[in-house]
Amino acid sequence: MSISITIPDELALLLGKVYKIEAECERMIEWKMYTTFPEKLRDIVFQLAHDSEQHKQEVIKMYEKFLNIDITKYINKDDDILLNISSLTQDEIVQKILYFDTLALDIYTKLNNYTSESLLDKVFVFGTKEEYFKTMS
Image: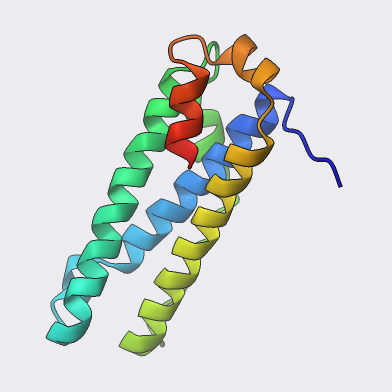
């Protein structure tokens, strides 16, 4: 199977989805909840929250390097993935966060593997292809 991301809106939409996944991970790690976690889980949760924020900022930087792409069109779509975590145990919450983290990694990998270089030549005008692929790997 040969897949190639060649349409600007598809690339922007996928970046928007990964942004939302990162934001959802952060939402699940709200400070109030964090303070109730046992110490053994706090380090893991803190690291995941930190990583999600950094990844979210990287996605924003990617959008800023695209020509004529409005980031708000893609990250504010009404396809939220919000989960109700109020009934979950702390271990279940951590498992959900790890699941979303794995899902985001999968999308980054696919963006790295399948984004057409010719597409980047057209839309990634404020950065280099090498920079894009380094960020997505």
